[in-house]
Image (tube, rainbow, N blue to C red; front, side, top):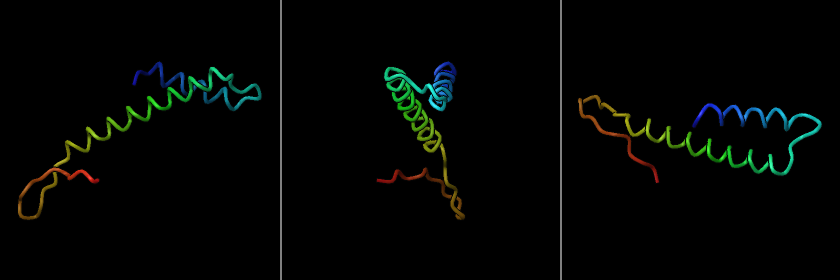
Length: 68
């Protein structure tokens, strides 16, 4: 995710804590940006986990199995 979008998420979060709050349009934008951020985080985490190889004491190697 681009740094500009992360900065916008933070900016909206700060504004939401002010007495003025967020407009309905800003709330929609915040929700969409958060969904995009969570999706990117999950993709990155899955990619990182796919690269992990477990080495057993007997020397065999295998990738982590995907849980259902």
